[in-house]
Image: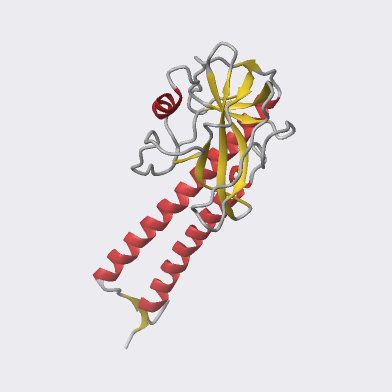
Length: 237
């Protein structure tokens, strides 16, 4: 460093500090998301070791809760939902949500898996459900919540199957009545009558992706600081 001086302009220091802070925050956020996905994978693994419990219309899934559960009844193929903006293997599509009517008159929403979307959004995928009485087992958990909720009215009238954007328990009660369980049952992959299902091994549960993003943000920060130092380290005249 002899014979060189480091005197960057004040505005450049402010810019680098601000950008570095933003990128470090993004890196920390990705680390937290990765840790959350790892914890979620552990909950799926722990739930797999327990016997299923029978669901009723009054069932309520607490946030973060994942348990094994089952429900017996008939699929209502006339009032199905398609959860929009769901991708699998890089392809856009929907998650098929089908209500099961129990003998007691309750309703449990079952996620029967992923289906691909048509290139023309006006053409919906053809989805059918077994007409006979079924017993569906799977993972019972709270309704999924998006990172940013769009201002949509999932309870608005329209044809079935209905495209929805992350409905809330209140919206489910609006669509199906008060005797609907507050949660979603993820149908077991080995049961017939479903679509693509990889609940506890899906790519979105892998924390490695988020850890990789965090490493990239930290690398960007180090690169920015390195360039800043090199550009402003000048030989003394």
